[in-house]
Image: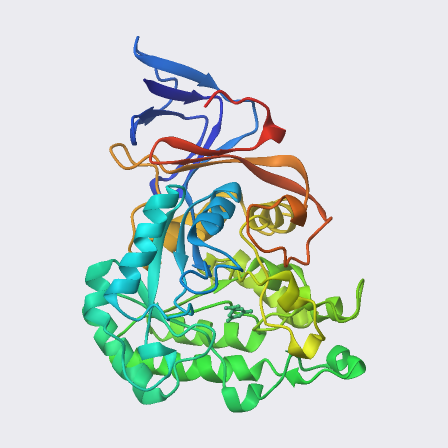
Length: 437
Ligand code: DOR
């Protein structure tokens, strides 16, 4: 049976189409997109309640699924369940697993797990270096063949300038970007929080913004030298955004992403409401108001290419220790859309079209994967968003296997109504009633 979705507002910036368009889902594909489409005898008409946005499937290009090896934190199945509940039809997963995703057989393993889960699409990102040790390049060609879409040593930076140079050159031959966790290890040292008055007053060792921007400048310079593409992950510091703008202005192939926590929170969160809350410990750390505001500026003016969650699940027992000893990272898949509406769209920082650019169009383009547009004949990956839905974040009710979020209990305006992958409705938000899809 075909399904004709009517009554929603289509947001499809890649095709310059925003407004009251209907969309026909024909099996696993998009059949047609147009105004006031007529339904054939073989078509069920779905009248969506007013106010819902029908968007190309959202793609989170920075997710830790933890499989293989850390299944107590997350699995491909639980992570993709969290993804679709968060409105994402696809995720790109990071290689800092155990063992590291640095060869074709582990790429294949992750893809098999994703096929078994049959929820969101999963695009593995391979390691730049074997075992992420920063010594030899990993088996890039065979990982590409097995289905990798990008390379990264995330969790840490690419260890040396020479290795980064070679990685950019080699990955460039396969059309893959290097996704870089920018951090100068000597400057970061054993810091655990942003270097500033808040960390000092709490007695926490600091990490300056320059630990990030210095590495970004190295990598942007090398992208210029090699012609390769570097994507700066989870950008947090205003100096890094300056570096990205500098690189873009001189024609280097540099792009960047920001996480919801870095455009919503600041290091003030270290002291209150719960001092030393390990759910605000992440790498890079939450920074100062000036940095957070710079991220909002970059989202608004187009300098930032993507929003990605850096969904980093950790078990409660691992987080329930002294701040110094807790692992870095928070989950993000199930709160991203609400935070984006509440903090970006409703206050007028960005439009809904720009939101879809940041969460779908650009991630698809940067990773070179399908999606990012509602195209007739393409797989029907569709996110239906409810911009005015009142949402109370509940960590206990999340699909993720982990609960490490600083947003538990927050009330936000905006959420996800439904997620459709390959024509199948894989998530329906009960709070939106029976949509009939
Ligand atoms: O906070 C973080 N957690 N930052 C990273 O770069 C890695 C991640 C993780 O794997 O837990």
